[in-house]
Structures are given as C-alpha cells and as structure tokens.
Image (cartoon, rainbow, N blue to C red; front, side):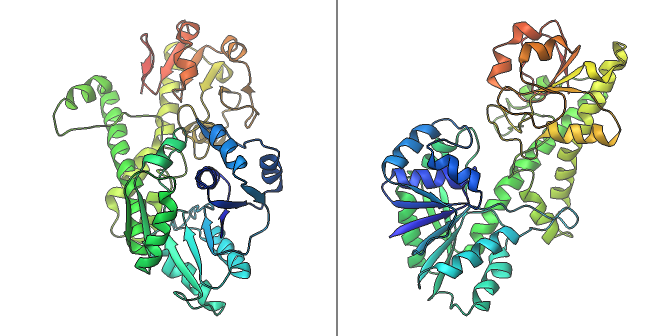
Length: 406
C-alpha cells in the first residue's frame, strides 16, 4: 500500500521524504507544476540542513512526485491553514479542497491524516460535513486522524526524528496504526488521543510561546522608556531557578507562532484577553523598530531614508523562509507611511523579492550609513568586522561591539 502526501511545502516535503527514507511507498502530490517538475529533476525547492541527504535516500527508495491525487488507503494532508484577517478565524478552504480531492479517488476504508494546524473543533465543523455530504460513512468508508506537525525550519530533519508527536483519532485502533507509520522515522514518544485534544494541544503550544515572547518584548519597551538594559536585566532575572524569560526581538514571524494564536482569538473572542494582548504586543514590534530607526536618524542627522539598510528578510536565523517575517512587516509599515528607498539584504535569498534588495553584501554596506540587524544569521555573526564602523541597530543582541538595541 502506498501513502499519498498532499502538499509538498515546508512541512509536507520533509515528512514525505522521511517516510520514504524509512522504506514506505510514498507518492508526493502538489498542484504546483513547477515544484513537481523541480523535484522530479532531483532538485529541492528550499534549503534545509540535512534535507538533501534525506532527499537522495528517498529517491533511491522510489518516492514519486505528481500533480495527481492517488488511489490508495492512506493520505497525509499538509496544506496551508491561514487565518481570515478580519475575523481572525481559521480559513479552511485549502484543507476542505484537499479533502474533497481525496474523496474523489480514495479506496473504501481509507485513512485521512490531517497534519495542517487547525483551530479546536475545525475537523468537526468543516471536515466531517464535507465527508458526510458525499455519502461517506466516517469510521467505515473513511477514517479521520489529526497528527499536527511539530517542527521548525532550520532544524526540520532532526525534529522530525526526535520531537514527540500527537495522533488524534476517532478509533483507537486506527490511531495506533498511524502511530506505527510515524514510528518508522520518529524516535520520540507518540501519544494517541482524540481529535479535538490533538487540535487544541498544537494551537496552545504555539500560543504559549507567543505569550512568552510578548512578555520579553514588553520588557524591552519598558526598559527603553527609562534607558535600562533589557538584556542585562533578563540575564540576571533568569538566574532565578524558576524564571526563564526569552529574548526580545523585532517581531514574530513564521507560519506557526504568528498565526495559530489568532485561531483561538477568532473562536473565543470573550475568553482570550491575554492571548490577544500578546498578539498585539508582538505585532507592534516592527513599529517599535521603526521608532528606534527614527531616533538614530535624528541623533546623527541622517535625513535620507535610502541610507538605512535592513539586514535579514527571513522570519528567523539561518532559514530562507520569509512567511510573516518582521522585516517584511516593517517594510509594509514604511510603505503605508510613504517612506520609500530603504535598502535590504539577506544572504539566504537567492532572488529579489522586494524593491532595493541587494544581492551582494559589500555593495549593500557601501550604500548605507545605518544598519538594522533584523535576523541573526550566522553570516552576519561571522562578518562583524565589516559592520563595526556603521551605526548599527541590533534587534537580535548579537553584536560583539557596542550597538543600539531595542
């Protein structure tokens, strides 16, 4: 029996490759014809530590790539789950579309595993009705499972193998069967539970992290108000055995921490005061960075915005993923205020995605006076000697010399 992985992005592709590397017969499906052609040619669509080696092993084991859904007994869906900007509720259209495409071709008794992160109750609200509408009997014709992904770009392969997983299923036997599938590559504990508990556990994991980051960011603002060193204060506070304050930053990006808490806000607006406040704090950080840039420009009488350079367009260090990145949020804020011409550079991006983006680091530096470090890539850490004579706003606290901070 083959397993059809639907959606070959940052989550689906590494998962498909790990399953294939483990000896399972895997077919990866995606509607993006360019992506499928690239994978068939033996080329990866994004960079990730260790991914190329796994890709080679998966190909040697016969993994297939296609734009067509397959007739098989197991499907794994890893499609996007954005939120609606106005209501903050889950936008389920991609999951619903993928489920309907599966139902058109699946074998009777097929297992449908949804890895995409969804808000609690989404499978009851959106997926079960679609299945019933087509005349399928859930538990007989189709078995539903929710196995939310739990990996982070930059360390995907290690985390796929070593992070614990949650399997939510209607039927315990089906849950145990899916657990065996994941055990083919996952060495950590795999918990089998009900679907709604699996949905909720994933969302609150990322919400917990968002709240902790918001606390650090609010501390940064308080300390800036009275000219205190937030990093020194956090360092001292963390010496307490039960205190672990995170580091502040220019905002929260990625498709998990910056998105999942909104699902709870959208579904439980009267009960999510803390979560909503945390989201607002983290979303405000690009504006805070903009204010710090303004302060430095005024202090040094720099009146030309084109003499400012943003280093880092990805949402975190050492990955090429720009989804929801604080730097792009900051550029959007500047665009809204008719502030054009700021320079940008990111060593991990091989193509231009914004205006005034440099592809050569030294050319970038030669054209600016104020450098704003938005992402702490290893590249910038190894080139401190090239930036020490610039006016530097270090939003990641990585500089080895005195610099402006949040």
